[in-house]
Length: 287
Ligand code: RIB
Ligand code: CA
Image 1 (cartoon, helix red, strand yellow):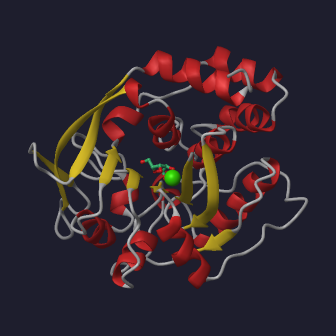
Image 2 (tube, helix red, strand yellow):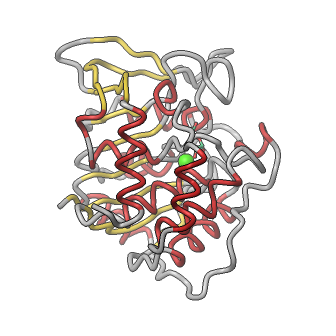
């Protein structure tokens, strides 16, 4: 069993990632933490609380960074419009809140910290000498970005934090936009999820029709992080070194240099149809 900490900015695809993690007995989710990226911190934390309530998630919630390390806060809602609020009813019960000390402790205890928002919280951990054992990060683009032609949103939202994290020496697997942008759930899968009777399937089936609206991503980028931990054979990694451009017109660009002795793994391919087949079965409680 992997003990996970999920550092997120829900976000529809973050919600799918949480649902997949919560539906998987391979994981114990120690905590959920939020960071501003998709939307301001109060919006993403309220979204996280609603998602956790719907999933009956028993772990605590930590509200993390509202601001990037150096630049002014910027969000996907600034780029693509909308308010970033997920279309869910207010939570029936409030999540237990974690303080910073608790967050830092659990981030070190976790086998894997899944970072699916900007990297501000993770850079903060490193600055305070609290190093996660392993990071799996959704972010970056080796080719075209989505926030700018050069930059993917999670890196663009705090490039200085991202550079600190990639230079830290912590083992990192990067799930980049290049392989996640095509992960758009087929209509028949959404229909099947809507009819299923698990919490995870119903939540995802309810949210997916909003994909592509109100600054909610159409591709389920962040769920690929959880899928990688569950079904690594569906992905092809390449070893090397990642760095981040922090200034100038290409701010937020991720550079990758292949190297057999590099500290990072970047995923370069995914078997999309098998991924959706496995995901549907897991969300529906069929395997
Ligand atoms: O670029 C995709 C990333 O940005 C995902 O984490 C998604 O939630 C959006 O914020
Ligand atoms: Ca996200």
